[in-house]
Image 1 (cartoon, rainbow, N blue to C red):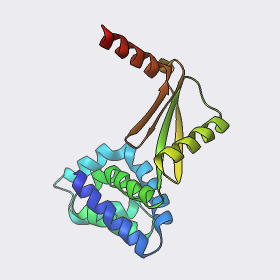
Image 2 (image 1 turned 180 degrees about the vertical axis):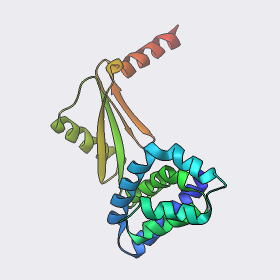
Image 3 (image 1 turned 90 degrees about the horizontal axis):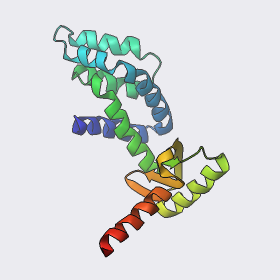
Length: 179
């Protein structure tokens, strides 16, 4: 289903760019995604129930997603028609990736032993931006007592580990190699 989700996301992304509504689309799609996640199992059951004809699925989209822009609603109608409403969170994740790529930004998770101040997060963010070449990072601070000290940052698939836990592990590996 990942390939299908990417196709929906790509189509919506291209439409958003063509119609110059990318930011609006992202905001509305994020709200839809947030509303759908707790109901994903229900959507999956609804999608797979052969009793739900296309008209029923379209009625669900019409009633559940009132007020969203026409392009997003049209995609939801197509997804309903093809019994793909349950993959909406995957479509959003793929769309979000395209959105972030467009703005040269990404999400970063910064693990630390204690909660970092906004000033500390800003400094870490600046350092990560320099290392990654991104324009912007959306940073989340996660407490991880096992680090002992320092921080570990994850940006996309990259990990920057400046924790004491990592330092100790490297020292341990050196001792093992010298035996």
